Image (cartoon, rainbow, N blue to C red; front, side, top):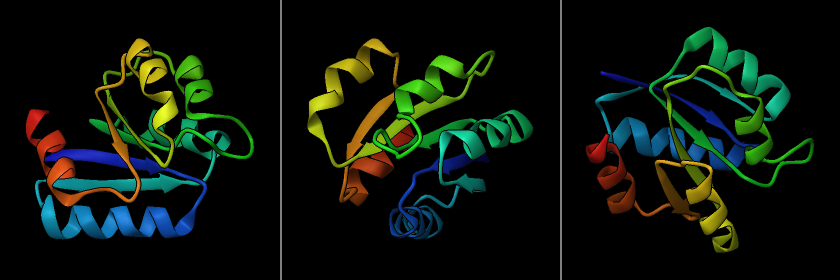
Length: 115
């Protein structure tokens, strides 16, 4: 069983991804969610998840800011964003995967399978 957290400022996006994981990726256990970097970092440190589903554009800092502040985590970062323009930057930040919203179920399942 893989563990995961979702960090996204949009509650609807968090709810949708949570539902998709529950229905289509039953080998992933969601252990928490956060709406910002400020709440996401302590969650990651506490839960030490295998996967971090991370939005990029958030009001109090970007997903890249979180990665810069994240230390000593082996979690796979899967960016979940509506913006394709950050893909190259995500690759350079060692993202495991990059899923565009609305998230395609087949792409989500493929990403989990790769892990």
